[in-house]
Amino acid sequence: MDIDVLIIGAGFAGASTAFHLTRSGFSGSILLVDKEEVPGYHASGRNASMVLQAVDNPPVREIVARSVVHYLEHAEEVGYAAVGSLLLGRPSQLGPLREPDRIRSDILTPEQVRRQVPLLEGHSFDAALFTPSDGVMDISRLLQFYLDNSRTRGLQIRLNCPVVEIDPVGDGFEVLLQDGSRVSTRLIVNGAGAWAPKVAEMAGIASLPMRSFKRHLFVLEGIDGIHPDWPFVWSVERSFYFRPESGGLLFSVCDEELATSGFIPTINPEIAERLAELISRQLPNLERALQRREWSCFRTKTPDGQFHLGFSEQLPGLLWVAGLGGHGMGASWEVGHRAAGLVRERLG
Image (cartoon, rainbow, N blue to C red; front, side):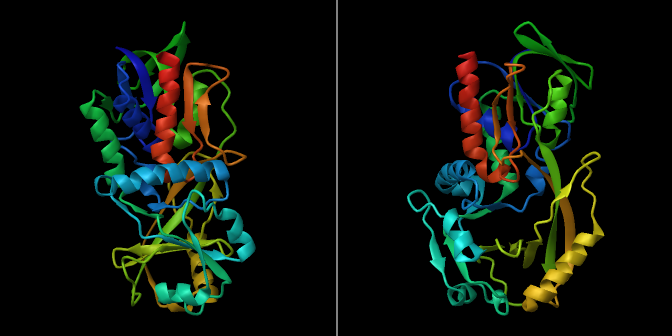
């Protein structure tokens, strides 16, 4: 099977790259493969669904902000609800996160915040940064938006189809899939998330420095007064976030456990203990909350927090679209746009 572009990974990085490449008028053939039976099975389908622009990395902030412009434009199609965000902390922490020329935001007092989110009564903080264009995404709808539009423009998708071998041959690659089929391709897009280093190793090159971290998410119930249109709340100082979820609260203590052996989304019971301790000390209105559900997912980060978005120096036909560090969903529109531009520059 001869293909111009092989995209490895059907999460947000790979799906958005396919979307932008097919809509750009690229005339070459594109195959997207993923080792799982459903797209976005891992980080892309297990994240907290929150789109946050006021991150502490300016280049990432720009990419997410550019993406949000399109999410607002296509809000119904992609499932975006601009409920806003409230970042809690000290003014010295919140000030550097503002970029008023690009992203509208306001500094609020604790009293103003508690009127919006009464659950924060009893929690001590100095100020909050309110960003009204931040929001919550229907992650399944966004992913299907990318894939369905790409499929109608000729993208081929093969799921439950792991890559077994990658052999550089001439100006391209010979790729063996687990079902025994072989693919000849001119270019590989490495959008495999936590498995991106393994893809590079299969191609015979040293992986770029990335580490994967596990994060736990909880859904709490038995809480009175939750309004579904509340902005999501993120404490920069205390390291937790929450948002309304199906009548309860989706909650995280922002834990990061280094993944050292495989990427199995197991549950660490110590994180639930951390959650209980945080609630006891910081959020008295949640003391009677009950845990309905818990799961974990992985986020893959680079040492400097920048995205790996560019061609390999060791193997120029391999394009990295990886190391998105928990911003894969929120940044996906602009990430895919930039990746598709690099493919077109290389292949014409």
